[in-house]
Length: 640
Image 1 (cartoon, rainbow, N blue to C red):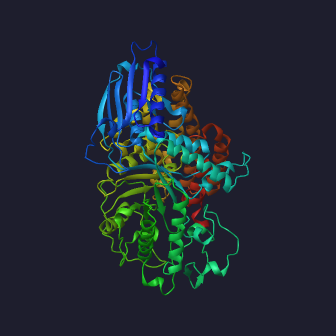
Image 2 (image 1 turned 180 degrees about the vertical axis):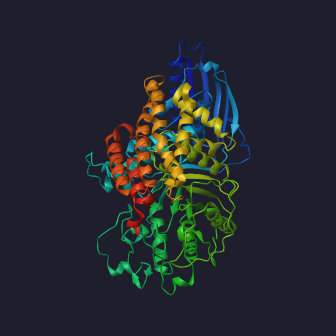
Image 3 (image 1 turned 30 degrees about the horizontal axis):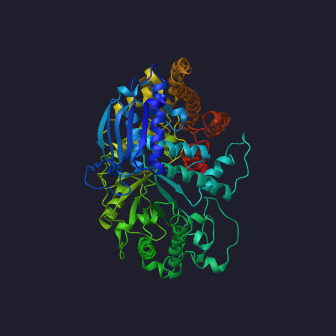
């Protein structure tokens, strides 16, 4: 076939060359999956708009905007993009139209149909519904996990990847040390190794031209020489020369909980502001790869400085002071990197005296980490938030309306670029074992981003959030590209691709599980021991047992990726049966049996980790129920 198919890149750079290689590779796979060769030679040209004199839909684009143009007639023509990244997005968009699907990251998630290029004609010009479309590293990961994720992003229309911290140490360390799985032998893992893996990951991001978000955490400890690489406590003594910059809380300048990332500083101190700004400048001078740098304060709250100077302003005022100084210093050094500031914890309150002087430098990030996922942004009444900031006595918003009230106030303050930084697949997806309710929530959230004034979503999530399926993350990605997608049609296409002819039965089964598991109960939003809920958990075993017959019929049938989808459902079914037993005991307040059931569930998931590793984050699953959610496992009497 090679002699009859030529794919050329008009723009000779790493990304478009890679795009040409990918297009030819997949077209050859499609051709090899059918009988017969090509009757004539075919030429497809790739390039940016300027190579073909194509005009953007709205007349212009920024470096972070994507747009694609495809004009392929019977296997010949052009695929173009507003930039090299968009060319790659255009290639995968064309292949999607041709019938290819990527239902989860990795080769095991590819569905490549047998099809002749001579039968494929696609003509379209599209601009995504949202500018910011990405995933942020979280959970426990191997290098293979994150490179598979980065490879998958443009295939489903995403354009950004966010590596938290300077070297992503904590995420790699959790996997390579096999934290929380006593059945696996951990290996020695170092900061140096994390840096090596991060560099390899950065190369994969660059090869695809993805927008690289970086750092976020650590700017309140790293400038003081205190490593901020994880959420672990440190034991070492810190000299008074350093602690004098710490926030004074209850008369003491100390690290309140021993976790450097949660450390707030004495932000009214000019030396503190200077150190933080200089630290960012030094980082950007030494690291030229980051496209968008996140500059965050502490990952803690109610530990702000109580000195007389700090009490003169709320934390957001000092934050804006530092942001303005940072902009001036970066401008003086001719550094054009965009800076993300966030709305999170104390910074949900808008500044009262200071204002961002150069909005073009900054991107605002709304991070509603305390929101509920029982409800979406759709139809929520925005609270008219008039609650004053109370130093070290703030109450964080729980409802969607309360969170959106804070966003509304910030939107009055800042008119620049902004996006949602959300956590649908960080912990909360574990409260919906069926996964369909979670998919519907993220779908509705994305549909309403424009309504609440945000231009996209970066999902802070487990990289391995694909058990029972990848439908939720896939739906998020596809809807960020096209917010006119119909949920049910997207579900039909996804489940038919992932499972074959009986995909609709898989969807119905998982929808039933979403209903029976009652996610609001698992979140602790329905605290009472309710007989109706107890009966639901009783019925899950029968539902799983009946559907297990269909799973067994399909485990070895169809496309290899579809067989794998069915095999994953086998493991998922066992997890659901054990989880339902645990929750049944929880509704009865029988915490002795809850503990016993949890031990059994943990033992099971540890025993199957190798089989489900690419799609299921054991570490984060255990952390969610043992650390994040005291409602399910902890006796209320013990927690008093």
